[in-house]
Length: 306
Ligand SMILES: NC(=O)c1ccc[n+]([C@@H]2O[C@H](COP(=O)([O-])OP(=O)(O)OC[C@H]3O[C@@H](n4cnc5c(N)ncnc54)[C@H](O)[C@@H]3O)[C@@H](O)[C@H]2O)c1
Image 1 (tube, rainbow, N blue to C red):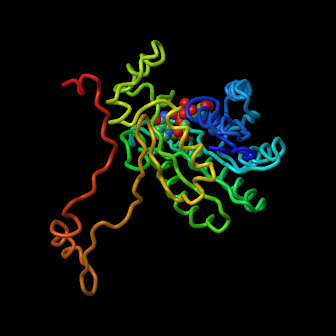
Image 2 (cartoon, rainbow, N blue to C red):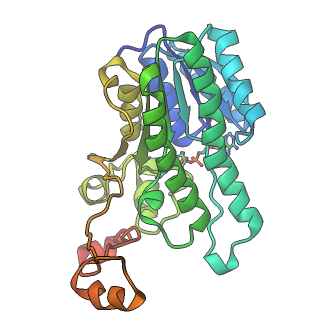
Image 3 (cartoon, protein in one colour):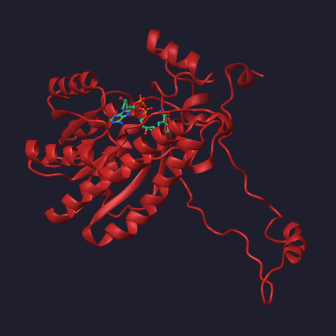
């Protein structure tokens, strides 16, 4: 993928998936603004990219406000003259079951993921529309946002909102030649390393270089951040000019297209429904095969062996 002459912002790219995205975009020739709330990791990421022959600058900022978003767009324009690719990846978790989740848990996650994505993409698109030659918006969704997940009211809400924004932006940005897509990643990072089914494999990979088993890479679609990054490079490229409004899953050896919600069963009643006629019709019409929900729990090593 050739991204020579293109300029990208990647939020939260000091480590984890964002770092892999920034490195992949830079390796393909793009100049990258590396953003992170942690200035140290952002600076280290820039050094790593420059050592590999790429172009990057660090812009520490806490994503979530219009001001932070504008700072990132301005930095891209000041340092590299333009902005073509906005990747919103910054994220935090505050997992708790609903009845224990505080307002702060909820607001923090919504601010960074949902508001952070909204503000950064709005600022980027304002600039891209002025530039007048299209652009790429690539945002981070999650299986939790697509399906719901235990303990993740805040995160699932934010990620589902991000998928909803992508579908809306694809419509709004089409005439400007700007595509908007969500990556739905699964990868070994600080965010996922404590999941019991994954933890021993991540440790073996990091300490002994033991490759992740097929049960993870294929069945769970779980791998490294470097397994996810090629999708971001592809979506940023001219080869993906016709792809917009999609939620695309990637992880380990898997690449997947997520469906969008749509009506799957419909019934009609002349003159409208009453509670009683709904009750009677439900089990034999629209309610016959209810939808499933939630991410299936990954199987532990012992369960897989059984
Ligand atoms: N790892 C996975 O399997 C997975 C699955 C689904 C979705 N995601 C999403 O991918 C993205 C990256 O996740 P990750 O696993 O690499 O996590 P990570 O915790 O390793 O990295 C997140 C990065 O974002 C930075 N960050 C946090 N808040 C910030 C803010 N307000 N402003 C700027 N930077 C901020 C952190 O400092 C960190 O460098 C997140 O949006 C996450 O929700 C990850």
